[in-house]
Length: 182
Picture 1 (cartoon, helix red, strand yellow):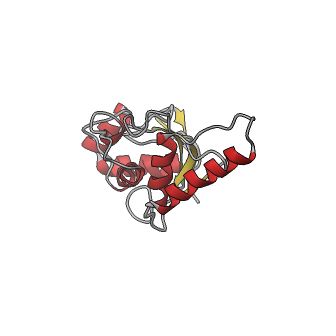
Picture 2 (cartoon, rainbow, N blue to C red; picture 1 turned 30 degrees about the vertical axis):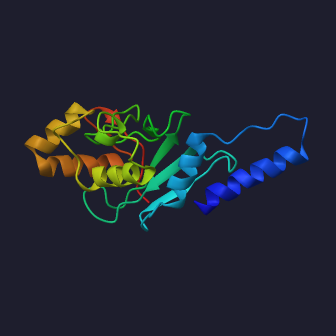
């Protein structure tokens, strides 16, 4: 709360110092994002980066699972938050081509808190933990990549082999994937 207050005070001071020139106001969405970012509890397997340090509404998120099928990979996500946040969820895309039942080849992510289960009381931490969970426990019952989901359902060992091949930049079922191994 103190950060929000100090951000508002700085804005008022800037407005007083530059009276006459137009200065952008801090929006409710920006204040909420600032609070969510301040409250984050990222473990050692997750990192944030800001391509533009002045823009907290657009940032990158990296997951490096230390267990599970996707262990040893480095997965990058692009977060875009619009001015209707928290009434609308952030837009999240994976920037790599992955072999994953819940992430399609365009980078779209199938995660319930990014769709029908989003509520304004949820925060960015809930989304990030949900993304991390997708790498620990891929969900074959709610897929975007139906081939990967079928593999996971029918032949878990074959699915694991396909994931390893894809993570290494290999080809699975005629499609070449990005190398994501660290």
